[in-house]
Length: 450
Image (cartoon, rainbow, N blue to C red; front, side, top):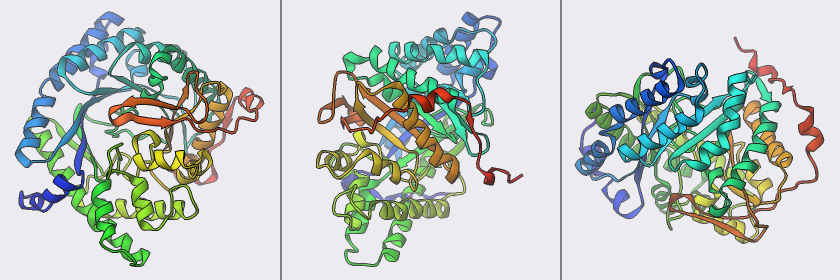
């Protein structure tokens, strides 16, 4: 049983080092909402979200006040909508119902406009994909994701090809907002079922009816801890990060358990990912530079990120038996002040970011590329990232914005936690022939573990 005394130690972290609970996400199963027709299903979805999440915001705020710990976002994730609408269709009606419900209960975002296509695409899933650009461009709070690969099945290149086209179309439909619609869509390899972070959160078929998953973030806390050990060996730094991650995770577990109890929901997991923000002092890039990298993107960056990611996970599993989600270090360019500076300084390139994703959580996240980048190049970029996830048996993802009308050296600005993304160069030397081949990249030999 956690005690309040364990949290009082973190007061300085909260007040001075930007420690917060990044999100409390209520994961809801919608399978019991499937009705006789699309209108009935959409209405059932709206009513269930309103019923189950109606007290989420007030409960999270009450818990935050009780313990003095900021909770930045209150979110909901739902079962993959491609499955919920499989029988009756009405995907756009479901998206609209989700958006209305999210606004009615006052949450920040709702995730789960999603599909699981790692091995094949059915007729109903193809119909779902057709709705993705319109659904995400015409709603304010709905986020989507598509899993196109896994270490057990390989990479579905037909789905990958389709996603490049969808990203381009979504950018076009939201051109007036710098292609912001693309920031609400994630393409995964090895997607997890209990992710509390947007835009990729959905509630997997193996989850319960109503589950609270919490994401805790503390780059500023880790940075300050490392600053106290300048000149120390990297083994010492790894221990410092582990101990700090332990404390951060305990905060998350307390908040998750308390919120779940008050809502009458199950406690799911604590995702202890270090999720940065554009705020000064809240950057993963600055942690890596404090470890000894001159500027993120330079030599040594991948090695330091590997140390950081591993130590965060080790510290988290010591603190809780319910660590899940993605858990590690995020490197979203637009959401990390240090990453933004490194891109503008010419130190951090798309190639280096891809290398970094082999040792950290998720992948190429909130990357802006020139608006005239071809759909085939976007698909090939997705395939490259999926290959890293598939071979390394880890979650990887792509959230890329082909910025309409913009080129290298320009920027797109989304505000809030989404921040500002400098447009980065992409080596588009022609990938159409590769993408046109389609088919499936076979799973690696180490997938045969059963």
